[in-house]
Image (cartoon, one colour):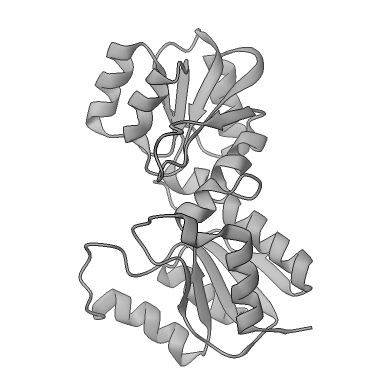
Length: 253
């Protein structure tokens, strides 16, 4: 049975608590569509391919991790942004976007989902003193050779990761943060991690890893952040009795 848009919005916000985060983007309902929602389609980013696929499925609302209206970007709605937003408005379809709240949720967030995929026991936050920090630290059940960890990541995420370090080194204490969080590597060093896992890599990250003696893995921004929206979408479906479908738009980054 369909639910009201306001009920869906309230349920998302109660689950993800966006008011607790100082973010670079407005979290929650970004585009208002029709008043009744029976099908929510989720995806990583509000790109045109995802929007077109959602509209082809007759979605009533779209849930993404990367939405619109980022801080410091141009506020004008022209070109690509106009096409994306125009397609949703013309079809009367809502867009919900949750960035840091969807990274950090202890059960349904990207970091929590990645930990389950890789069999990591979560011990706590990567940087407890940072109010905007979303990374975690934890342990493997026993020391794991880097080569075995790299194989596990490739099998779970369906893409080979980039690795800086020694493939024969055994590691147990791990830090991780999905997406574009390569700059947290020094926090991982400070936390005593033997390996740091994130989505992307920068030129300077390689030097930090080598000089600080920490293993570094870039497993893909998109690849590490496919799971939070799926988990949240399924939980919303369970709570409200509406339909949820996830669409994976391939992205090699």
